[in-house]
Length: 512
Image 1 (cartoon, rainbow, N blue to C red):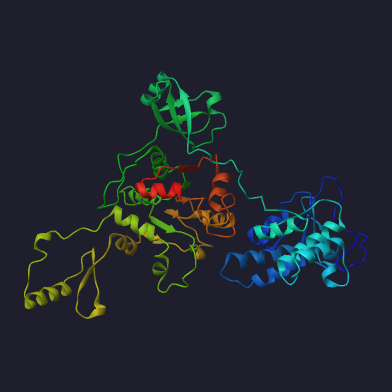
Image 2 (tube, rainbow, N blue to C red):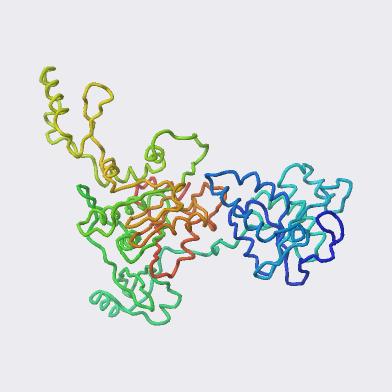
């Protein structure tokens, strides 16, 4: 058995048994989850020295999650490998596995070779690339140790190249949800017509053991009788289902009433308005009403005379679709405005800008002298709450503030940048995190741990629309949070499938 420098190692700690495997970790796995080192149970773990080089190049990224994770990995490795002997021989991990740093002697001494290295050089001749060198290190481990060797990487292209040279490769699966998760938007439970009538009159009903088996707390269901009569309900645990507590409509102050248009939106509105649900995850394709309902229910509760929350906080990850246009100038609100434009659009719908009181006189001609006196009087008078004067053009003209601008200036609605959320403690806020499918599980954990008592957070997004190259439909933060928090009394989940924006939007979402 060869050590990192090509000599014989007599005290290597790598285990060689029929049940043990050796996993070689790529850089992106450690950046995705620095704690992945402790999540391979009793198997051998090998980290190529090229990975340390890549981590060293990334650690100086001060304002990025990658930089923070690279520094966390360095601290973990420093604690586990305190001296050169532990680096050469490897160490035992707390859970029973082993950890080793691998240096491929075939790359140190180009004159040495092996059948596997010859095959590698024929297929991937450019060994100056870090990915190819990591694959070469994994091949070296495969040659030296009998247990099956598997390269673990989140880079699909590296997986394909590894398989091309005869090396098993797979994705990091520890934080991925099962493939069959979340098939239907809700369950249907069969009841008799008499049970349904009792449920409607009493507002609650206890399911039998067979119907309640496997039903998580706060899951939404549809009770259906043999006669075709239905009633929506929510499971509160131990087989007890209750009627939804829905108002006729929700509205912001001075706005228009908003009602649920379908059964799934009724489920969402019930969860949004329930103080007991502190975490709500919502899946939904484009046009299903996620954004509009979330901000409508938030403002309905914030502006109520017995408001539980002091205001609404809105945020989303800053990940562009297609080519990035570069940095945006201005204040935080101005920088975030393009990313949060869907919420500004929703606020325009909820609280539309009021037209002039007497539009029939808007075109009436006024003399220049009277117009000037009118403008001077307006400038001298205190500005009403709904107007703002623009003094930059020198003519004293007044511009009407849009409703969402008034909400922003009053602090009722705040824009949060996720880049600055670490260390925060968010109290008495209704927090809406849009496009949560773009976040990693670690980033979602960082956000959720900022939520104080008395606050509520809503994670919404579409797992089928992901632009972040480091997550997919099964490993993103939205589905991860749903999967881990499912069944908790303070968490609920809703899936929206029916589009309500327009027939065109519905067809585009389904067919394109």
